[in-house]
Length: 299
Image 1: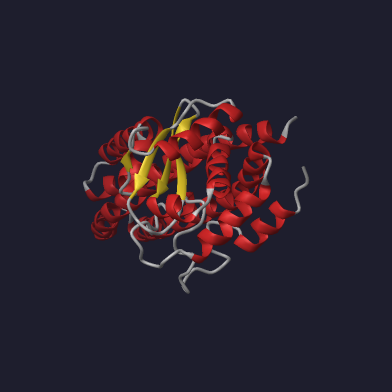
Image 2: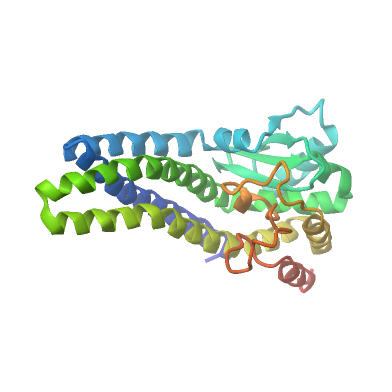
């Protein structure tokens, strides 16, 4: 089977896994909240409603949530004809519908794609990207984002971002309710109940961390494939390789686009210049390695 179709199938499986994982996690948090209110059924009901809403929002509205979080605004062809012409040409070459285009007003060059499928996707770029890259470099970046759309990476990334945010929010709620449940558990469940609640609290604290590590592993693997697919689309790997080198040296820690929840979906992590970001916890493979692989490609 074609590697691209293998990737699409794998991304869809990962998406289902994410939904299952978060359903279990939210169920545990709901159980803890139920202990606090002295009604397990109520806690699980609340968890079920929240999970359903999060699932619907992440699948059908995740694109809008992410572009809003990024501070992006949709632009028309009249506003950005150069960008539109570039994307239109690559959309035709890739056999994909024209995605919605968004712009972030910042000098820091970067870009990302979002959405649930090729028919409902968007590409967001910064004004700095349009100013600092030449035509071939810009085509390389746009082709990379087109590859994410074609490979359904955008579905996985969009779902992960929205659901991870939901878990963080519920975690704050559950910490308070679980604390109260611990003391109530002394009267109802004895030492076994207290131990169980302590384990639940540990899960609440660690689950977002495990989820982040899972997203890191997925993102790093997909970046290589998107690089290769994008280079194949333009027929000029050097364009993307040169763009990656430029973008990676122009990121500014604590810039407008740096957002812990969104860093993993950009073509280059906006926090790449931060001393606190190690290779182990990076959402992307090293830029040098990505560039090397691109320049080793033959056409």
